[in-house]
Length: 483
Ligand code: ARG
Image (cartoon, rainbow, N blue to C red; front, side, top):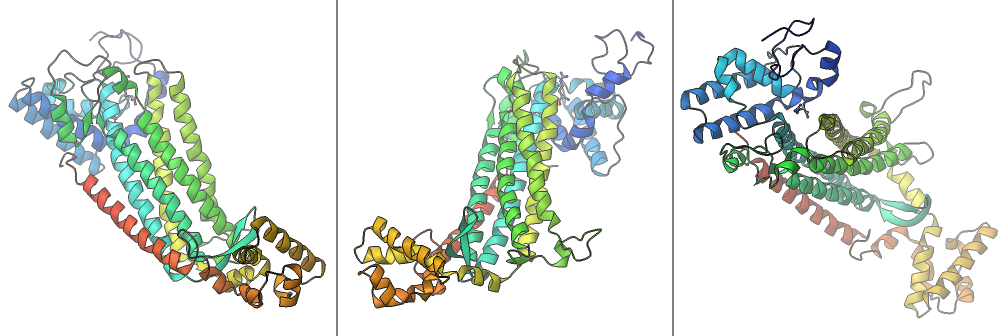
């Protein structure tokens, strides 16, 4: 080992090829340790599976394998007890583990990297991470669904206006409104499980790009690590980060949904709406205005959505000009993926609490829903049932809405005679349409806000949440290397 530059040589695994010691600036710039150190468990698991395969393939003997696996287990213990000491020369988590294995096990450590490259190693680690991250996110999403369903059960018959264009539109129940988010989250869960399915492919055995001349048993490694499939093309396997894009994109859309819910909590908590109040435990104050009680957590969920959307852009931009196969640019994938997963997980947990804790002002909701104009469509549909073509009914009711606005009255103030004057099809019961509770009961069509329909939705949501949780338990039970 000759000295090449003015820096003292530190033992890098690739140092034989280079005649000089790496400049500290380059070392700092190329290091990914700050970001990828959290992959330690995946890295050690991958190495243990790889070493077992090398043993079974006769590429290392039993004693060598034992020394390697014991060393790796010790390293895992060091990480888990926070005792692992990084070295300034550790470029990434893979080199840190290998360097430490040399210290613990000596020269035999040099056999671990047989038939392996950091290129297929990092892809394996990241896919293992994606597999468990997706499950954790799905679990967290079912917790938020659960909270929404609980509140929906409680507010089964709480009437409130539904809005279109920011204008009061028609009466619905608070339950129906909350259950809309359960649907959104269920689609997010579907996307996460789908992204997970495509992450579930073992790259190890692809080497740097062209596989290996050694007869490695890739299926054995896949089984050991709990992967369902092995990659079909070594070039694709080391350069593919589609799975990271998909997980991140699933997180971004999930965050968009969380952001919409947050937006509503923010507005509902305003004096203008007055639909909701956060308990003091879940609100924040102002440093200047003594009267303020702010929904900062919801605002931050909305704000952090911007970052996760940015993470998708980061990953897509990272990949778009990248020639095959592995390029060091790919090291930048982790920051975006981890940020998206961490942010989505934290946001789901916080929103679950907010949904559990928020106090709904049902009187304010009912007062807003009592606006008779919200039942204009009901009157038009009433006339339709009496044979009036819908367009005509729409016109009749529309002109009455204009008329009462001019006369500073409401639709409810019109007498049966006035209605009959406007439309001969109007019956005596037309004035009974203005009861907002019966308006809700008229909407029991499947998928509608009527109490019967909502009961059906709640039952379905409970079943779906149950089924998701069972599916997640089954997936988690797969044999990811017992430690
Ligand atoms: N730290 C690298 C990454 O995260 C690991 C792979 C590096 N491979 C290489 N040949 N330099 O992508």
